[in-house]
Length: 70
Image (cartoon, rainbow, N blue to C red):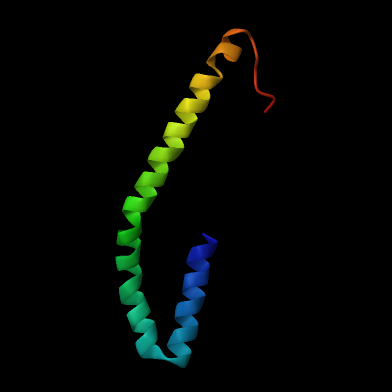
């Protein structure tokens, strides 16, 4: 959320100082977001993989009655 606010502030400052650069930024931002989607998907897959490995490694302890503190 704070990144969105920061992007908005940058666009407003660019619109005041140099509006063609602000328009270029507004056109480039969705393209950069689309380019970042595969990397976000890869991060999601790795996060799920490590959660699975953690669950698999802690399975013997969980079967013996250990519970996490939180």
